[in-house]
Length: 437
Image (cartoon, rainbow, N blue to C red; front, side, top):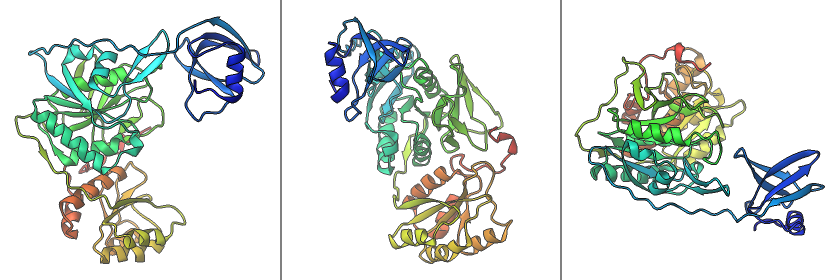
């Protein structure tokens, strides 16, 4: 038991153990539920209960009253045995996990949660997946998504290539949501794929009644069977469980810390929606790459020494000089408005250009388009060698520059590639109708 100090004394004095059902009263409020363990390093005053509604609550035991209602067993997981037989009439879909917990095995009697990091775990938690396709796969990483980095993009891309070459009709990548849009952009540039590559995750863990994991996974497998041979993100389109959207990997961004519909397509609409197992293209005028018999191709040379820098009032030119002096190969500026930063930065940016370090301008506004010809500061920045990438998202621009510098170090070629639409990252025209209200 991880409880200690005041809380351990409180539980021991009442002969209460993990798994017991108790009624605890604090400030005239009653909490009834199962005693769960606590994380190592937690304070010594709170115990954790799993309430009957599925949520966990922490209660300060100081001056609390407790009643033992029922002795229980320590929560444990007993995983069911899988007996999976391939159906030759169904598509073969591979699920690759990078560590994002999009599904968990839950013992509803005890409240224990087992993170699902393998395809077998996903099938145990969501056996309905087998109604859609033959499912196989494995975990290649076990990290929180904030710990994702370029070398893991490469590892993920290579595993996708292996799965496709081994006959997968589509691939689902289970990923943490915080940096999913970076990975989706990276895989978009690294891979030329003849089959769908779908990234998905969950905003709410599977032990919560409001979990979005099940619908996201089911819809992702549906998308992986579709005709859209691109890298896409599949997540809830609303706060309820009615529908998911398929977002292009280079045009999507996480826009809310906790909402289930956090992922939004920026400066465009989602490519498709999925509802009740039916996929619908939302804008018939949008061209997309269709499934083919072509061989999957990988271009996984990356340059990791690229920085994403946010402009702000008072930013020092020393920041630019730091990256130049450290030998960084490229810089992406998240500028203000139409693509600006303080004029005090211009000499340092000119120095970067003189050192053949490309400096890319994006906008922290996200919606709209960079245009550096409108105001004098923008024109001065252009003269110093800074170049815009139109309506490309800052995160996508960062990822694309990491990828581009892996293909070439020639400054003119880098600029040409960055300003050329390769995977839907740049739109010829940016309509105001897509502004997020």
